[in-house]
Amino acid sequence: MARPGSGLNGLGYPPQNLARVVVWEWLNEHGRWRPYSAAVCHHIENVLKGDARGTVVLGQVDAQLSPYIIDLQSMHQFRQDTGTMRPVQRNFYEPSSAPGKGVVWEWENDNGSWTPYDMEICVTIQNAYEKQHPWLDLTSLGFCYLIDFNSMAQTNRQSQRKRRLRRRMDLAYPLIMGSIPKSQSWPVGASSGQPCSCQQCILVNSTRAASNAILASQRRKLYGQGGNAGATGTTVRQSNTFAGTSLWSSTTNSSGTNDNNISNNLNRPGTQRISMGTARGSIPPGVPALPVKNLTGSGPVHPALAGMTGILMCAAGLPVCLTRAPKPILHPPPINKSDLKPVPGINGMRRKTKKKHLRRGKNPEDVVRRYTDKIKVAPDEDCTICMERLSMASGYEGVLQHRGIKPELVGKLGKCGHMYHLLCLVAMYNNGNKDGSLQCPTCKTIYGEKTGTQPPGKMEYHVIPHCLPGYPDSKTIIQVRTNEHPNPGKKFSARGFPRHCYLPDNDKGRKVLKLLIMAWDRRLIFTIGTSSTTGESDTVVWNEIHHKTEFGSNLTGHGYPDPNYLDNVLTELAAQGVGEDNLKE
Image 1 (cartoon, rainbow, N blue to C red):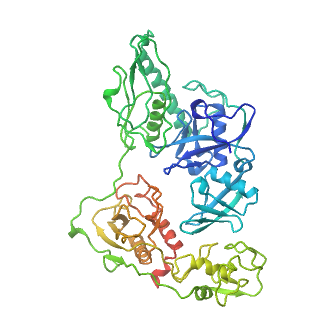
Image 2: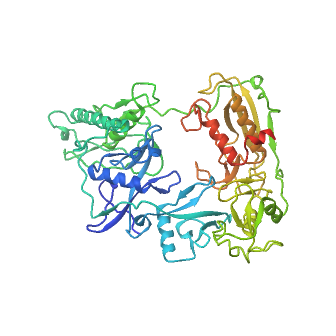
Image 3: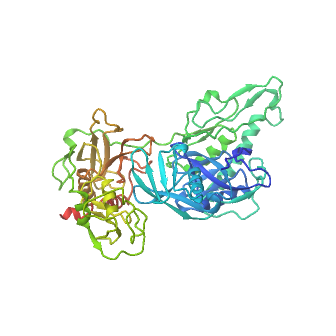
C-alpha cells in the first residue's frame, strides 16, 4: 500500500508516469486520519488542478459539509461557524486497492447506521477478502478486532462484542498520473472561468480579495517604498501555531540581505482554534496587526469572513489579532434552594437506581419462544445473524446446545416479521443484557422492556425561575445526574459528574422529562464505552439519547435555541423502547 509522498505545500505527488489513486483525509480528535468520500475527493482534486493554493468549499458537493472549507495553502479544514481547524492530508494508494475500485467497508454502530473504516484498514480488509481469507486479525494495525468474512462480523477480542460489517460499492476515488503542477505564487490570480454565485463562494472570494489588498498594504509598510528592507537585517518568520505565544519571531541577518525562506508549520495534529493569545510585544516595530473583531456575530464583521481572513494572513506570515471565541454558557445564574420547585404533574424530585435493579428474564429459550412463531417451511434467504441460509442449520450448531431448540428451527418475530434461526436468537440474547427483552437486529424493533448497563446513580429534577433561549414564556426544568463511584476493582470510570441538563417547562418539555425518567429507571441514559471527546475507554458515556447541557448558548450544538430538539429526543427515546404509549400504561 502506497503511503503519501512529500511535495510542495505538503500536497505530495507520485513519481512521474505512475498512476495513483488519491484519497483526501482529515485528522479527528483521536489522532486518526478519516477519509472524505470519493465525491468530495473528486471535488478537491478539481479545485487543486485550477489553483493549488486555493480554497475548497465542501458544501458544493455535500450539503452535510456546508460549514466546512479546506485551505490548500495551509492544508487545514476550517469550520466557519465555530472556527475549529483540523489538518488534512493527500494520500495515495494503488489503483487496484479498495479506493481505486470504489469498495467501501463499513461497520454498524450503536444507532444502527453504518460507519466506514479508516482507509488504511479498508484497504487491508479488501486485500484479505480478495485472497479469500476466512478471517483477518487487525491487531497489527493497533485494533483488537477480528474480522470474520463468513459471518460478516467484527468481534472485539477484549469484550467479545460483535458488530455487523458490510462491503458496498461506491464511486471510485480519483486517479492521477505523474506529478501535479507547481503551485502558483500567493496571492493567486483571477480564475479564467465563471465564478460560482452561491453565498458561500461569494464570501470566500470577497475574503481573498480583501486579504490581497491588506497584504499589499502590509508589504509597503514593512519593506518601505524604496526597497530598503535588507538594511534593517530583520527577518519576519511565519508562526508555528495560531494559539501560541508569538505569531512573529525576528532574527538578525549579519549579511544585511533579506531571508525569504518562510516555512509552513501549520500542519500540526490536533484541533486548533484562532485566539488572541499573541503577545503584542513580540511583533516587530512598525508592523501593524490587523484587528478583526466581533467573532460572536454581534458586530458588522461576519464570523466566517473574520476566520478566513485570519487563516489567509497567518498562512502568509502576517500578524492577525482576533477576539477570542465566545465561551458557552453552561449554567444558569446562582439559584437559592428556595427557588427550586417541583415539576408540575411529576411526583417527587429525584430517582435513584440500585446495583441490582435489572429484572432478569427466564431462560433464553423461553424468551425467544415468547416473541417468535415457528416457521414450518423456511424461505430460501439468509439469516442475518449467522449469514447461513434459513433452509440450512444455524451457524451456531456445535457452538451452542439448548434443549428443545434444534439448529434447523426457524422463527418469525411477531411485530416486524423478520425470520432467524431460533438458535441464532438464543446466541444473540446470551450476548446481550439478558433482561427478558429482544431487539430485532434488522429493524431494531424491541420486544419486551429493554434495559441497559447504566451504573448506579441518582437523578434530580426541579423547576428554576429562568428562561431558556427560544422559550421566553417558559421556566426551565433542570436535571442533575450523578453516578456513584465504582466499587474497588471495577474497571470503569465516571468523568464530569454531576451533569446538568435543561428542558423548557412546558407541556412537551414535561412529557420528555417523564420519558427520560422512565429511561433512567431502565438504565438507558448512560452506558460504559469509549468517550468521543477524550477517547478514554471503559468510562461512563451518553447512550444515544441526546441531552442539552448548555443553558444560555448553543455553541457546541448541545444548547438552545434548538426548535427541533424535543421532537428529536422523543424519536431517540422511542428507538430505545421508551415511547409515548408507555405514558398511557
